[in-house]
Image 1: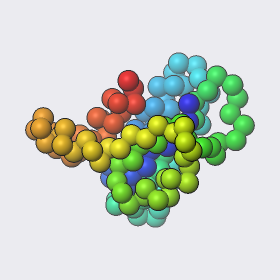
Image 2: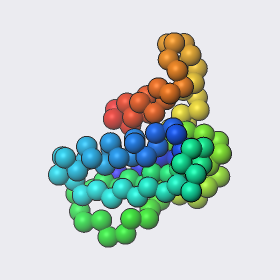
Image 3: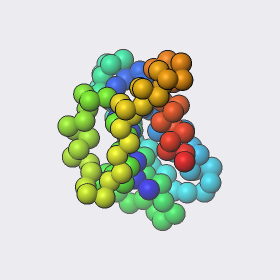
Length: 118
């Protein structure tokens, strides 16, 4: 499985990526987790590249099978890592769910993690 989580610093992109990688590793999968973010930790573009497989991971760059888009700002860059078979999770649409259930926007990363876990 090849997952790219994209967002801005402060949204938990790296935390979500690390949790997924750690969970897969604990289940004896080979895992590659490559964080990518700019010099600014808050509000800078942030990507988490996670690759999980039984076989040895030879090259960590990939066309993603699952793309999670947390903000529009990095969408253009993210699109260079997809193809017609990529499943896109648009976290921007989840804001209505958060409002309806009286959850703050800070809950978005845990909601995304739950969706990825499903």
